[in-house]
Picture 1 (cartoon, one colour):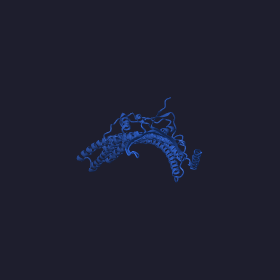
Picture 2 (cartoon, helix red, strand yellow; picture 1 turned 180 degrees about the vertical axis):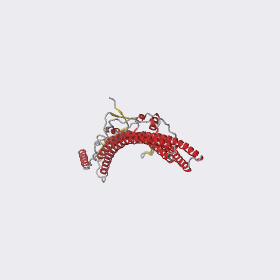
Picture 3 (cartoon, helix red, strand yellow; picture 1 turned 180 degrees about the horizontal axis):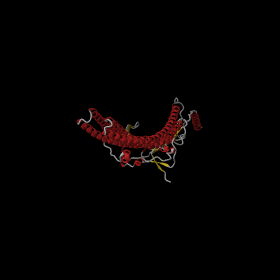
Picture 4 (cartoon, helix red, strand yellow; picture 1 turned 90 degrees about the vertical axis):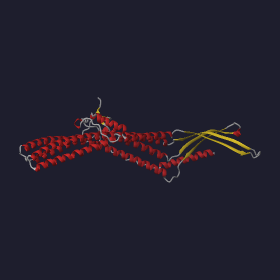
Length: 463
């Protein structure tokens, strides 16, 4: 009868705790806005993501730099360590669903005096014992914690993929910017050499009395203005090389060059555009989905913690003593315990609400990631289109200014115009050349940004 009363009390206690747990209400997660079906430009089809998209530039030096960074970059190695930590935590959490088996042992040697005989007695007592324990996952708490750990591992892995994509894009952008600076420096040095020849000519004309001191001063000023640009671009190149060296995981050193800027071109965008479904390949979006799954599992585990837990224990061993004359006593025990929370000042319910709030944060973070991804793709595609158009205009301006310089030079030589007119034409052409090269580098960088925004490059699907 006493055993029946104990079972009845346990059942009543579990029912009461379950009723209290049911009273904890959790607000539903915020709804996600449906993403647009396509970009603002025309959608396309038959496009697949290319993982090693940087090879599309057909520059062996660029490919080598990116692959070196993916192997030695410190951020990537740190991300790999985070993945290893998450995998170990998953193994540790999964082990909690299995029984535990421990070996315990004790030994005692004592000297005592017999009460009847008054003689000393030596006794040796040893007790080896195996102990087993197992928590019955009645409400799925341990399973939910394992699911949360598994989702966290997936989030760490996709986070490492996101770092990998960012590092590759940073190296590609840095290299393209470096080649653009190289081209600008080459133009500046050629222009400086031209200015030096013009200055020498102005000096000879002044020495012979053919021109005034004003024209000589103007030639000197134009030469010095161009000379300032050369060290400025050289410093920018050195800084770019140092930044690339850090991305490569090595000390600052010169960066190997490949194709010149004029020969570097990314694969053309598909004529029909890029489908929005490619965004599903972005690692940060996959990471957001894994974080939502982890927060949902953690919330389920927090709610299950409000319910009773059942733990089974058992042990088996022997008691050996010198006083038993070699006849050990076998000992064993089997039992179970139920732990039901009754009063904890709202600590467990507060934990449930905190888990629900973290779930809402994960959902809102995922929503922001998706919206940001669409905005990044839109910005990159718009930048590619407008920078190409702007560069075409800059190239035409450069051609027109080159013709203007030719005419101004002839007019000056024939005595129909002053040297100031030729100087203005030289200055305008120099600035136009630098601008055209900068726009070309910016257009290539915009294509890199599109690769990054899409989670990789694109290639025509096999038919």
